Image 1 (tube, rainbow, N blue to C red):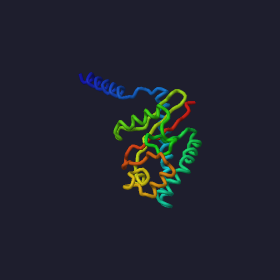
Image 2 (image 1 turned 90 degrees about the vertical axis):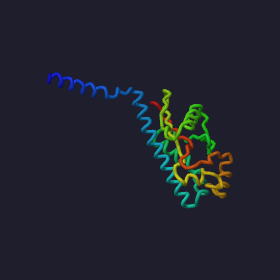
Image 3 (image 1 turned 60 degrees about the horizontal axis):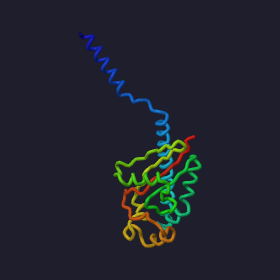
Image 4 (image 1 turned 180 degrees about the vertical axis):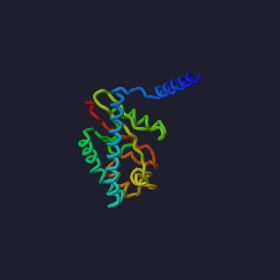
Length: 194
């Protein structure tokens, strides 16, 4: 009786350990996880690089200087990072400032609409694989009070000189009216599947 109880306990523990093991990942799942990890790293590096330069421009000349800096240099920063990491890096938004950031690809439009329909707590980065390419998407937020100096509410957060430079450099600007921690758009990073 004592041995059968021990044997039963041993079999029970063995069964429990086996049932808690995850099923092996497919090659596609592993590739997707690698793409997500790499995409997240690149998006974080890009965000840090842009913020570092914008903050420097802000210290040197306030929001108007930061806007002019972004207008001239933001694309170059992202292009250099894209070359370094052998990918394409874009920012997309339904309320874009730069005309090149509006989603023209139906997939991008669908992703942004999906992000807008769910709460910030439910939003997370993800990867889409279409065979030839892997697309990594990560939400962008107005995460710092300084963001509102250029993306907040006109006359409340955005001063008159900043509004004038925005109107001059981005006549079709739609990237204002945000509050702190609002969803603003997404990073889109494209990797070749080969």
